[in-house]
Amino acid sequence: MRSGPLPWELPGANWIGAEEQALVEQVIAARSPFRYYGEAPQGMVERAERAWCAAFGHRYALGVSSATAGLSIAFSALGLGPGDEVLLPGCLWVSCVAAVVRCGAIPRLVDIDASFGMDPQDLRAKIGPHSRAVLAVHMSGAPCRIGEIAEICRAQGLALIEDCAQAAGSSFAGRPVGRFGDIGVFSFQLNKTITAGEGGLLVCEDAALYARIEALHDLGYARNAQGRLMTEDEACQLWGVGARMSELTGAMLCAQMDKLGRITTAMRDAKARIGQAVDAIAGLSLRHQLDEPGDSGAALIVLFETPTMPQRFVDALRAEGIAGPPGSHLCVPLSDWGLHWACNIPSLVRRRSNARDGFPWSHPANAFAAGYDYGEGALPLADDLRGRGMILQIGSTLSEGDVDDIIAAFRKVARVLLA
Image 1 (spheres, rainbow, N blue to C red):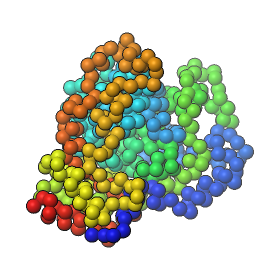
Image 2: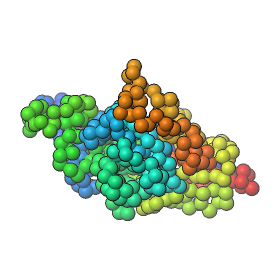
Image 3: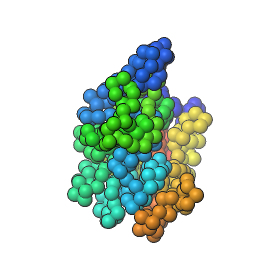
Image 4: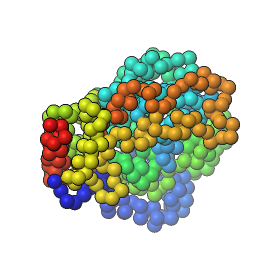
């Protein structure tokens, strides 16, 4: 169908231009890349935080060095540790599990549903006496059943963290993701909807919780108006992780935020055209969309009737030119989606530890989790979907011709393989 590669699937990176360069150069010219003080601070991180709150209705937002660090900060801010378990879906990213383990708590896996998000019914069944928090993940730009999950958490007295790393600009029932739980975490790493290369953002609505988050992302203490550490507040005498966002990252983020709406609109429009065509092909079905207008449009997940078909179909699509430049993972079977599946994370399945004593698995307060299974077979629906699916990343700069080629290739391959 085509001889040249499709554009890189990196949404925000495809839109980097003069706006990002100008703001980064402004910081460099001021010789003040640290957010709290310097020769002439430009306030880029604070500007991005204010803009995010204004755009999505949050009371507080805090820039951090990465969403991975942000997840650890969130769990620490909620006081989680040994003796606690965090319920999280089997379709996620390795950082989600890592943050639970590093705080000394135990991950408890919950199965997913046809939306590829956490299944509320399995969540209810898994809640136990050690359950303290739920981590809901909005995978590949599509919101999970976050309204129902939030209701369950309120009824059971559980904290709710939303992993929105892949879902900037997404919403559920008209409400932006990140506003359903106690804390929301966003990512601006290279693969994300908007990017600063690295970086993340935590959002919350509670003043006391935000004070802990702010102290923990820094050195464990609050700062005064001059950016100097204050050690007097007993509520913020903690152990920080030094995960501050730099002004250079903040400058990139400010420029990218102005483009977020255009990026998601481009992806949604392309995905809608491709999805409508693919869904009409006999033998193919799509991931269940809970809120199509609220999907960022970042990815199309296609399901087949048998587990033998995804690899054959992807190979044929690639042979038709439905592939990105060298190094791209634009089109892959879900079985090759690596650390997005809990059962593919060796350090979880084998209960590996950073510590010689095996912490947190070895901690006496975590003995309740001795029988927890993290391997293949623990989550039947996740295993089934992983075996029968493929994912097509939707680029943010696809032309009409690119979309036409993708649709034509799906139809051509299906005529041969699904006849």
